Length: 380
Image (cartoon, rainbow, N blue to C red; front, side, top):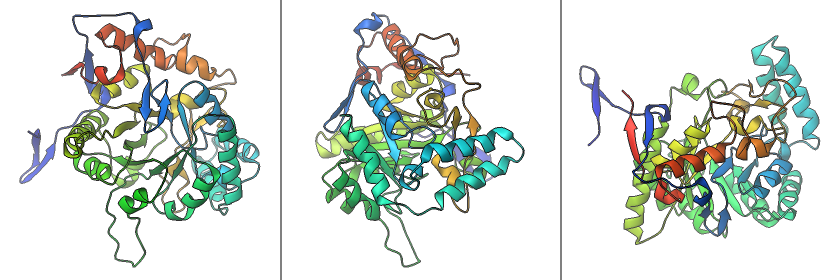
């Protein structure tokens, strides 16, 4: 039963929960963290850790996607970002972060980011980025928006992409238009492709179930919200309470599993996950993997030079993000330290996978799917 509260006469709202509101309840059994597996599989592709990098240029360059892939994760290149528009991305990112670091005008960096994204998409540059990742022998994933999916996908498939991510702030299986343009029919689009598709973001059970019915191999919950960087709540008034939204999508996954007689759709949690404890809670709520942005942007391998911004920050008319200094100073941790430690941070920003493994071990679970059954408490 939905927990409804009255917010005024004749108007009710559902009570929802963030990851901060939830605690994991250990069972009577514990085990060694050495006996825990964090592996998962999406369609034909197996990953050693449930970590996906958010598709923003601040984080995922072709080289970063390769480094994360070698460590068992998945980096998603933004197919409409700087690597698809500019030949020398390192130079433009250096200029962008220099503007951001001056702090003279908070809008100046976003304005420059918009200017960079006003450059035309160059399919050859995007194909070269895909080829670079593919030649390294790791899984190649590229994100496209619903608006540009039809135009960009044939070239990506020809370039050798393994996974396609169709992602917007909020995405649905059915887009209604009165303007005459041809909307993306996600079900037809997926059925005609030879590569698996991950789609999102969603925030509730009904939308997640609808996306699963399109044939998506995975559904993204959330829109990459990060405090200080993502401003969708301020601009659109839309927010995603991640603990509730993940649990809703997991329930949709169970319903769809019964409906189809066994087709399992993976749930990827993308938003407000900044520590190893958040990673563990997201899996415990029902996610198969987490999509990380700012927590990975601190790594020395990340192209953003210690800065992070969501892809929505570059929207030409309504930016929904700002540049956040995710790491201070030049002494940034390696990607290995961020993922696997050792950590000197008592608050969980380093050794993200190690924290997940220890949480699973302390709770007595040996794999991710079993850990999704762990008990949970609500604070307060």
